[in-house]
Image (cartoon, rainbow, N blue to C red; front, side, top):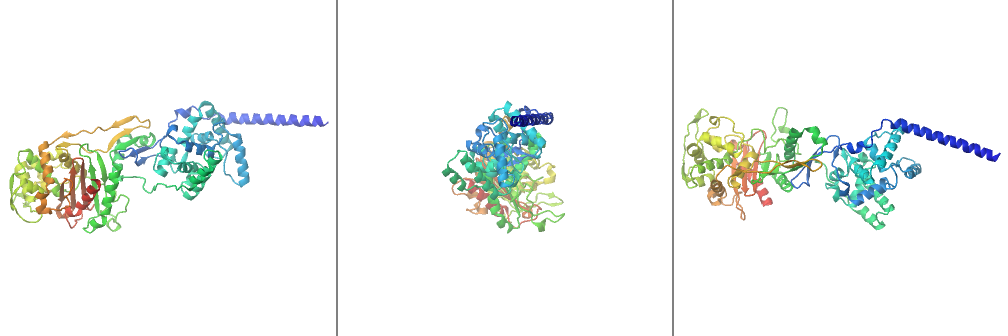
Length: 617
């Protein structure tokens, strides 16, 4: 009788088991009928954001992304201890299972029951990869079955190394942050190949709850220690190492400003959008190497900001700085306003009223430009020297009526109101004398010829007939852009060669194929002897001393630097541009609404330019 009962129980157990297998098989068939093909993994294009770097290719300036920020990293470039941390924490049997880990599931259930809450789901790395790639995050039986089917298939078709590499690049690790490389750049401002073991533990910790932990650093650090404990249990590290790693301070990147050198970067972005389109840039993972020197940019930004209170004393509320390599035209630093991240002054930004300070306007490239004052003079003197006149040519500094302009006689005055009689062109340019400079344009160069030749120097804003500007153009009676005028001074620095300014060195796709590369070229537009003459005059401290003093802002004890200031009518614009053979720097100070200041260019803009030059040299 006992044997019959046992036989009966066994029979029904077998029937239930087989029936269960049949149901399970049927479910797998049913839910697996519309699954994506596993081989789609190799066909699938991983979305990668476009990254804009400085000239070193290491400092990330900005990232263009859609819904996902991602930069692909090869498995060979990932530190072993990051892989160990992930396996120890997420899937300790990764190298032995075939897609699902029954032991892991049982252990997870036991842990959940012991803690009285869900602390883990026992999903393997392969299952997590499937879930984040093809499926939803819904906690349903249907999704779980699909996940298991695909995990088994993926493991059958691909190597563990391939699966792990996909996982490292696919896993979400914060707001719009996908993959270990992007997370490492975001949280630590370094490549994943450069992180320490404690930092690797932080990145691994984020896998558990990226949205919550990325916002709660304290909880994240607790989870980090859990990861280190898991590495100890799995014997990847010793007990002493674990204690040392737990004590190691984690320094997170301050991500308050997710854009560096904003005016420069937005100019680069505008070009990229026109060239490739937004959708392409947000998905194809371009790497853009720009001309910007991040160290110089930081110096420039800090110097401009340090002078904020000083220039406000002259009723000046904004400033810009541009630095170029005159030999190539590469833009090395660009400060488009004194502080991009500042709010405009509320009392000057009422509806319908232009601001004294508008942080978003790039004053180095602003629209039609601003009046440069005497900063335009060297270009006209160069034209006179081209015609055979020399620095010893004499002109008469005296009151002169140059005829009717704008309905009244044009009788310019020198800045100090004095007349000097006979002066050489060297003295006239070095001391920035107005009356002799107007004579240079009127009698030696010619108004029409002078304006026509400004285009040769790369200035694009003089598009109206010469009669519109008149002779006052030599004193700055027309608008220029700081970027273009600074570039024009580069012609003197290179002894007659014009290298037009540009900002992008190289564009690569996500396979590091070069899509575009700028090979700088310079064109001779001025005789070398003429360029050298201008440089000699603009660096002649003795010649300019009667006007500026022997120890002016433009004088350096140990360097020969050529420089010229400029001030527009009513002190609305303050300029200074100076250069060495390898660096040309221009500074503008003023107000966005064109409100007058109360001092000339050498007083307001000069100290900013000098501080920058001193720090750089």
